[in-house]
Length: 414
Image (cartoon, rainbow, N blue to C red; front, side):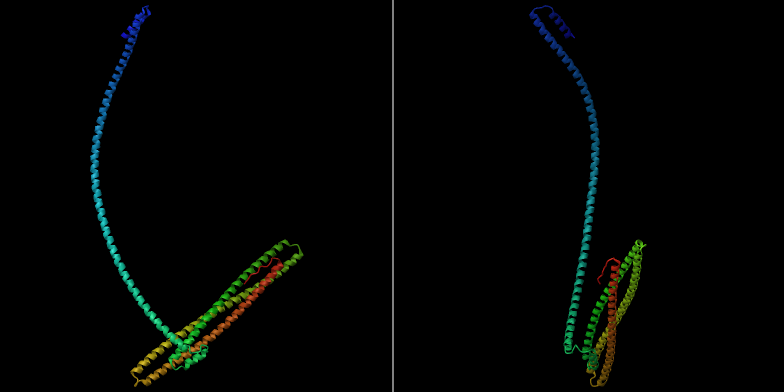
C-alpha cells in the first residue's frame, strides 16, 4: 500500500510542470517504485506458496507416518506368514522324502517279483523246450520206423508184382477162380486173389465215373425240361392275354369270332400238349428215381465187394497163421505129429476152398447185379432221350402256334 501511495504522488509531480532532469529522476523513481511493487507482489506470492507448501509438507509427513505404520504392520504379518510357510515347506519336504523312499521300496519289490516271474517263465520255457525236443525225437524215431516198414512193404510188393507179371492179365475171372480152386499152395491163392481185387477196384472206378457222368447228364436234362415247362407256361399266359385283348376289341365281328374259336382250339391243343409234357416229365422223374435206386444198389454191391476183400484178407491172415503154426509144429514134432499136421493142413485147405467158392458165387452175383444196373441205366437213358425229343416237338408246336397268333418266336437252347 505504501508503494502505491508513493507511486501516485510521483505521478502527480510529473503532471506538474517541472524541469527535465527532475522528470528523468522521477521516471527512474517510478521505475524503481514499480519494481519494488512487483517484487512485493512476488514476495507475497512466495509467502503464500511457502505457507501452502508447509501445509502440504505437514500433510505429507502425516501420510508418510501412517503409510510407514501400515507397512510395518504388513511386514510383521508377512514375516509371520513366511515363517508359517517355511514350516509347511519343511513338512512337505519330509513327506516327499518319505514318499520317495516308499516308491523306491515298492519299485525294488516289483523288480524282485518281476525277476522271480522271469525266472519261473525261463524255467517253464526250458522245460517246454526239452519236452518238445523229446517229442520231436520220438516222432522222428517213429517216422524212421514207419519209413523202414514202408520200404519193406514196397520191396514185398515189388516182389509180388514181379511174380504177378508172369500171369496173363487178360484172363477171365472164371479162369482166375478156377486157379484159386485148383491152387495147392497159399502163394498161388494170394496171387490170384490180388489179381481179382485189382480188377474189382478198376471196375468200381469205371462204374463211379460212368454213373457220375450219367447223373450229370440226367440233371442237365431235368433242368432243361423244367426251363421248357416254364417257358411254355409263359407262352400260354401270353396267349391268354392276347385272347382277352382280341375278345375286347373284336366283339361285333364274325370273322374275329372265328379267329377266337381257332385260338380257343389252339389253346386247348396246347393245353393237351402241356398235359402230355407234364406226364412225360413225371415219367422222367420216375426214371430219375429208378436211377437213384440203381445207384443205391451199386453202393450195396460195392459194400459187398469190400466185404469180400476183407474176407480175402482174413483168409490171408489165417493162411499165414496156419503156415507159421505148421512150421513150428513141424520143427518140434517132426517124427511124432506128421500125420496130425497133414490132417490139419487138409482141413485148412478145405476151409479155404469153401470160402473161395463162396467168394466166387458172390462175385457172380455182383456181376449179374452189375449187368442189371447197366440195363436199367440204358433204359433210363433211352427214356430221357425220348423225353428230350418230345420236348423238342412240343417246342416246335408252340413256335408254330405263336407264329399263327402273331407274337413271334422265342427259341431256347438245351
